[in-house]
Amino acid sequence: MKIIDVKTYPTVYPVSQPFSNGMRTTRQRPFGIVEVITDAGITGWGEGTGIAPRTAIQSQVIGRDPFHTEVIWDGLAYMGVDAGAISGIDIALWDIMGKALKLPIHTLLGGAFRNQVQAYATGLFRRDVPDHTAALTAEAKGYTDAGFKAMKMKVGFGADYDIKNVAAVRKAIGDKILLAVDANCAYERSSAIAIGQHLVENDLLWFEEPISSDDVEGYSEIRRALKVRISGAEQLRGHRAFRRMVQERALDIIQPDVCICGGFTEYRKIAAMASANHVRVIPHMFGTAIRLAATLHMLAALPNSPRSHEPFPTLLEYDMSENALRTELALEPVRHNAGMVAIPQAPGLGLEINRDVLAKYTQS
Image (tube, rainbow, N blue to C red; front, top):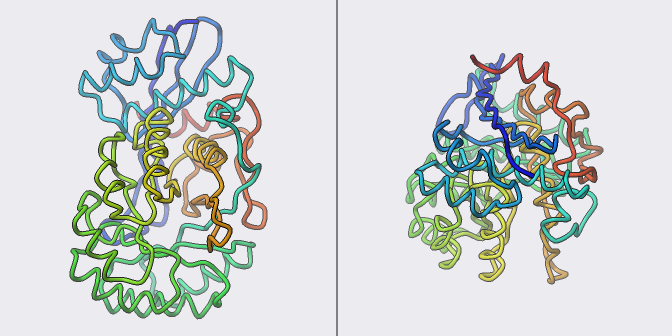
């Protein structure tokens, strides 16, 4: 079997109601979707944070065996292609392999430890509303009413906003719901520690990305200063970028994103590195239906903790923000049922693409 063509789709979903994290306001959501076509009539789909140059695709992908994932990955990287762009191609190759073998990707990764996963609702962004606290508490209660037993809230807007609103959300949802916060790298070390000392009073599951994603020393300092799990690394690309963060245990939890870190090929190496250094893996997910399906396969193949007293299970980040490329791109969208999400069992990624939706949001 050989690859005969690669089609790329630079997609953008325009958000009708902008929302903000601690660093930026989202008004549109861009994604790099890839379709890899073989001479066997099997097509694979992938998603990345960018699209590889046509010259690199022609020289390193076209004509190759799709099972040669390491060779293709290395060739693209040698040509200077960013890991976020390689991710889309790599995921599509794994989709092809699964379809060719009539197996879901989690079987290719070593087998599924679970057939469903608990989801945490990611939302609670800052919006342009008269009363932030009222809006946030109403949204949080909506998630608990929908059956979620965990959620994540955006912080990074300064001490007054963060301290007041995290406390309000915790009060609104009660003490049995898992609550994490995410600053999206908005703070520097001293502010993260000073504000974090107040936030941890709300029984937080973790404090995500308080500072720049690659500041190993800073994360180590914050981890020593705060009595809460520190998580991050969603923006790191390629397994080598994770090396110091993992080996020096600067984070309690690493959050590789399959569409940023380099696809399944790199994710396996990152997960192995984390396991060897006793660092927990909870993948990041904030993309289309393709990224959601890929993340579910990663989660299925994550081993169970050998420690029976682990205070929380393996978790799926379930993006609740507006994005038709997540909710409509697959002919059968992934949905939660009272906060639980089933692992795909069909070959490859286990989804079929709605080409009408893809065409609607693809920029020419």
